[in-house]
Image (cartoon, rainbow, N blue to C red; front, top):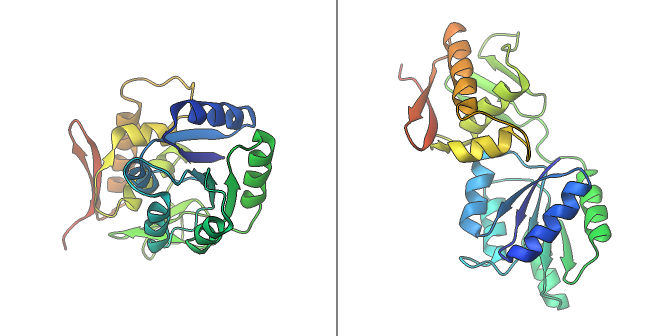
Length: 227
């Protein structure tokens, strides 16, 4: 399970990340709301842990922006705001759970597991670029009018999903690396380039009318070809 931890307190973030990794979670960190929104656009997370006191925006504003995009990812607020009014405001803003600091790591992990047991609200979600359709739940990509899915590996599907989720925006290479490879995994300097090349070739070979562009020094962009 992949978790995005949105917390600007470096020491606390390190403590939480260590505890979650011990519980077999993969954890990405974001110290600002803007960083978190960028991650959400490119990486598919199973849940998020959100601090409300972020340096560039209030956590509730980030949550509202996330929900405005119809993103149903479970979000657990982890905050020092302990008043009942704050808790009600957080839950009414779209949070799925609310835990105050200080907290026990065992309780945080138990609450995460409880959130992840809930039925996903995005079942059946389909992404589409050109004549390519990707069912993000069934993990299958196919061309319009064809019953057989494209033959893509797990990581190739992840590459395709990240590019399609960006909606015509550039997918930064460093975020793609974070999503594709867990912490501690060895990867060469061109691992993402190799995967993108494979996906690009397979799409071209099957008649897809979408193109993956390399934006040198930044990342990759997928667009539908003009008729």
